[in-house]
Image 1: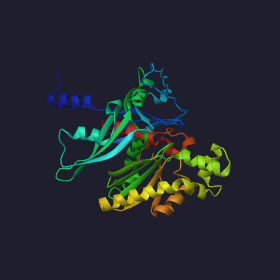
Image 2: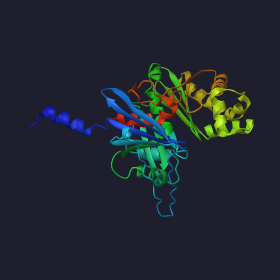
Image 3: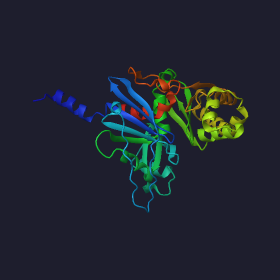
Image 4: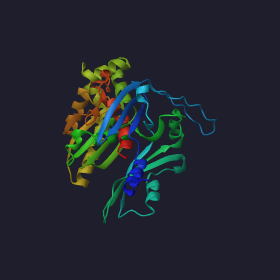
Length: 349
């Protein structure tokens, strides 16, 4: 018979979250996969790879359900649970604040704060970012994803392992990875910003002493920038991407045309946070496939007047031998959301 102490330890073990998770970022351009496991307090990357895009069917409310293909992964990614991330370009993401302490009506206020006309047709989630214990404000990060999208993704794994354990927006998963980065933790007492270029949207967030102070999404993504370079130089998409990466041509004018409206919004957002939080944003970390573009970085550095850092999302992780493919060297940003989806689940264990 177990002692009281042994029984308590047994119950704690049963309540623990997953210790081994495969993160799957269903990006619109490709499927990005990373497997992590938790060893004591260390997060270990055991495998990572990029696969062709996974096409999810459009589900129409007035039509019979469209079959969803089964997503099969190589043996090295076999885990009990899967942490899934989707672009969620039409998801609603808001940082909501409420005065005073939390009460039984807080959840209803969060749903109302999302401003949805049909909340029942969305999958809604929220996380307490900062809790007020006095007369200050409590902050919540709230998200609503249309059920027509949220309900499809788990069907990629209809049986067996991995079983879908969580679903989140890719840009939010990137934020989780960002907060776990070693270089960010070294600056935990400062205000830092993160700019994440997605295919169709760009997400801008500011953290003051590791607490989320602002999040905004803009309808300017990497696709619009690549398209502008293609138009300006008369080249195909692959060539435009190469030019953005290596700076072989002067494309500052083309970049400026696309970035100028975005940079204006970044300046307004930064100034708002600095006044409201009485802080100074010390650096801007850039994620996404423009985080290494010299022209892009120089344009933003000049306009914003702060340090810009090309961020590697694998820093701070223990990487098992052979886990990170050599062809991803310099492109580790592609794994940011898949890693973050894993970390969010492993942190709960």
